[in-house]
Length: 270
Image (tube, one colour):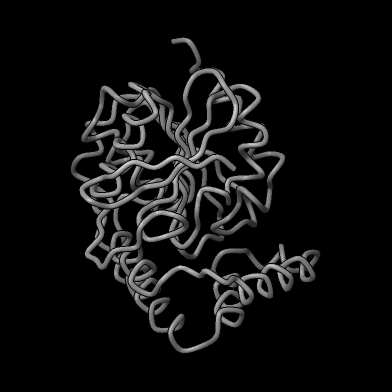
């Protein structure tokens, strides 16, 4: 895989590209790098020039000590766009990536053509803040495989477990064997960025077509958070995924790819 990198305020941010056409910047959530988009970019790349970055704190990108913020990582993404020669792009962001995408749309409105916001939020309540704080403690208390097994309980909804236990076990085992896991300060820096993100009073500044998707059983970003985004972003529509969790884009992969591709194509060449 051909990676490129750019320095953003002294931090190296790595990215790679797939496909050709109008640019689509894909921003991953906490704890994961750009490669995790694989099951979606394999569809999108047939229509778009997909730019997938490793956020600061994970993957090939530098993992400096914190603090991190979503606005800081928005600046990192803009640095990647500049380096790639992209003046304006469609954005898709999952979880923390969706919070980053909001910051880009607010702080760099001329750089954004449309938004796809997946399992994300404008602000946390105290319950969700506690969930994310406890992820820090849990990760340091158990080995990598056990932590992934625990994290899967937050990511996937109970119905998914009925037919996918073997795949979940294998993913947890693979996480335990990862020779280059995310560093502690990278993981905690990203979680802090999630916890402190608050765009509620600025969401009215987003004036591009926006498509919001959420699982009805999401614990890490409950449906009420997506409803708040929908209420505050003028040109937005929302799609609920029944009996799905934080990763409804994997749980209902075919539906998600079909709906999101339709949205992206409907905003092409406008």
